[in-house]
Image (cartoon, rainbow, N blue to C red; front, side, top):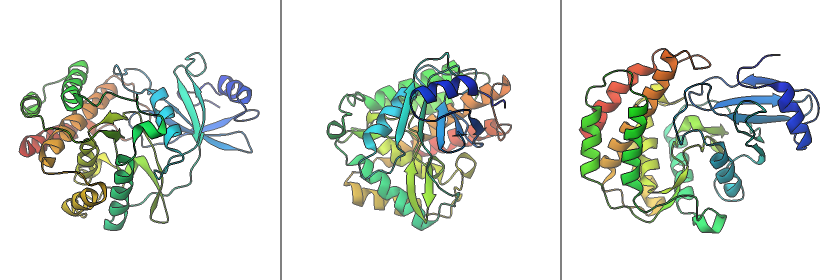
Length: 314
């Protein structure tokens, strides 16, 4: 059996040695992801999930398997639902890149209803009230200067993936850079919090996934991304495209977290810039024939509306 991005014989040997699985493996790629590759892997008795970086063009500092493994391991006994972590491998000889193995959590696709949205906002607030030092993540990032580094980082990522002109994107960067808010108390930041990066069971969040961008920093960057995804259905599985009141979700989060959201417009502008850059990177990989799975052909069309929205917010 051939699976893009996995050498099942080598993987079976490594996971057997680690006591995770036993014997030959079968695997299938979970379709829909546009960043790291995720596989359901079975040995005939046990089912686990394997995550590895995308094939081909990979931006510097992105797709850090070790960070995902560490942060989910640190959170597994908190009020934030995450899968159990089983094994991390930084030997690129096994499958061609570092990877990790985690628990398979049951969850079903759903739409972002007001009720589900409120529970997501609750989970996000729970994440942001955790003291990073208490879960062993006190050194997980550098909160000082976080917003300035975010703006500059995504500009560097944009420059690394430029393959065409994108109207307004440099103006959006300039506006963000010249009017940084003053951050509140730092928190564990997921970095890409949305419905599509969770598993939902019985209307509740069973697990929060995809922690590749996690760090310590300003938690309102998470809130802004979450709210933005509700308005751009093409960017998130099950996003409602305007059916959920994002103002109510922001107020609910503020009440549960105690955070000041008075500068939320700037954060939404940053979210637009970040998603535009990420989407442009995916578009670049698609044009080079380096993506795996369906759903990439029109991804580049989302960049311009994101930039336009960002310019309205900042």
